[in-house]
Amino acid sequence: MVGKADAGAGGDADAPFTWSTPLRHDPGLIDELRRANRELVMSYSVALHAGRRGSFEAAALAITRCVRQLHDVQRTEALRLYPTIARRLVDDPDGAAVVASLRRDANALARHFMRLVEGLFSRARPGMPPEALVDEARGVLQRYLDEKESRLYRFYALTAPVDSDAA
Image (tube, rainbow, N blue to C red; front, side, top):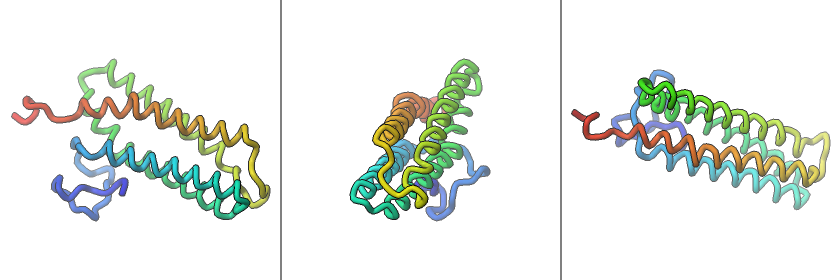
């Protein structure tokens, strides 16, 4: 589950990450985030499928789950990914500025996606939303995930301990 400590890394498997959890590179974090991102896409797909079937209540629930999953992923990144990257780039102001800009761009895409899906399957407007809106939301979600995958998650690899760090 996104946001849980790794027992093998010296933490309690049931202890949630908080702002006071020590920063450390977690070799399984990117895989965990990728899984969570796939679940996010799946929830959006489930919502669209339910809407096409006319099950708008199920679609609304899937959209709600999708937004909750997006918040969970962002929280995990805020607690575990970005602070670890920032610590590694403390002596590289240009690299830190690039990461900050990439993070800002990713968060803007996430907010855009949430605004788009907010009313997709509201009870006040039953029925399938316009296809253009559905496609735009799908495209924004995909850009959000692609940007993180191709750029931000690569910076995390720089935080892996090297032999000189262990000494």
